[in-house]
Image (cartoon, rainbow, N blue to C red; front, side, top):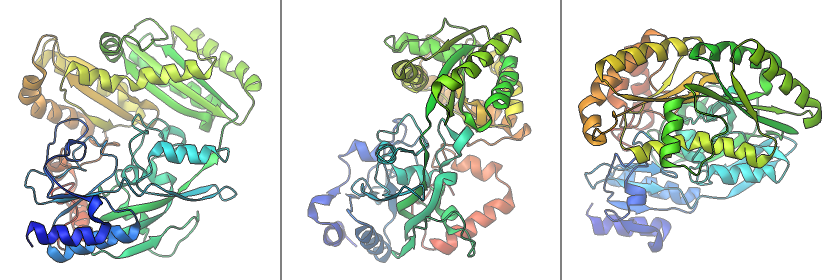
Length: 469
């Protein structure tokens, strides 16, 4: 089908103002990292699930590849077209309605194009909490969060996006609509189809809406920042926090000094609560108890950790502004890295007990191989997810460093991760960036089952082709 005929059919599906030729919209055709720069045949923005289904049917009948896209905040190149100019990019930004909030059932139904922040705010209007929290929550969308099984800072307490989802509405690769927006906690009626689409990165169908779990908003939240005497102290400190607060511990973020130095260098307006040290931890406690009742236990925790030698200094936020400032520092690491230049990113998952061993081994190995290399290490250590990023030595060209070292460094990092029983992809997904890595490292039996699912649900191979598998 030629471009004019395809454009006419797409306009009939969604209206002429919502179909534009590709090649002129970097916001949709370039990924968030600036690493993938594609060109769509057309960019289509449906305004309802029925319009999504019409577009998918049109592309299926014309045998045109389709790339679903949410907020385009992904980090593995899963939501942008390739350079062929043959893909139709399906943007879901107009599907942005909160459909229903059932406060007694602690559930909310929203369309896939709602930003994560909009979902959080809708829950807050009922005194409830939707706990998924990401640095990009003002622009990332619920559909994209589910399509990538996003994690974020509160997985330690509430789980990934998968654990927060009760039901889905999905347009299949053939353009049918699966109405699976169940708000039930228990529904054992066959295969868990919801889980097939969560984390599938748009390769099996298009998530158009979801019903998610809500929680009572905590009565009090304590946010603190501590410095460690050494890396080994992180595990006993985490164990003490878990022992004292159990599920109340909602965040436990490990950050190295290099990350904080980059923030200070490139974003000096972001305040740092404590003097620089090699390792620091940002932690958060949420509780239904009143703040006055909980504060003595927090102060006792810090005193006991200091007496045991597991921390050397501590700062406790006393206002919402101070707490927000601590989180702003944590979230400023990635922008500071971008300002420093291209770097080799790793999003790995490890048994929490293995994290110090992994960090120490890789530091010795990479420092010996690349003198002066900058290791930017931070992440959700409470759930075992580490962002292990490798930056060029001072004075080196970042782009040249990436081209020269990415393959070898990534192989070394992922080899060590696998030896320690971890995963080379924790929360960012596979996309285009890690597709070949998945083929190399995933068990053949698992790959065969994944390909069988893909063949069953998208036999024509038109949904987000060349991504994930």
